Image (tube, rainbow, N blue to C red; front, side, top):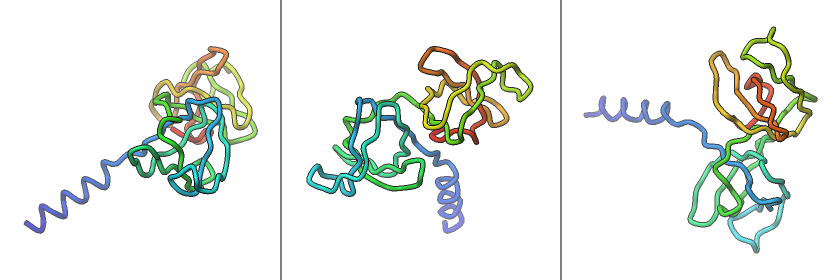
Length: 143
């Protein structure tokens, strides 16, 4: 019995994948507690990705790219998956290969729609202008 419980706990811990959502409103306020009466901490813009930590009825505790924890109203989040460029810029390639031609370049803090995860640490993304390409997962946050 004890062995089964330990195995179940081990599998439960390893099966948990991070959940990300993006801001769907033009802007949204991040608070220090799950209430509009709480202290506002930051304002984030549409498509900013946030990692979901805790889900309540109307509020979600989230982590941003800096690691800061805050609360956002659930209605401000959408299901569209996005990532943001963390370095000064990133080159998106036409194929998931470092030597592939560059499809587009995006600068720091630009949000890119996450289309799919590709093998070997690549992500297929779409720029707001419609261009698609592959970036390394290590060059963006939110995926």
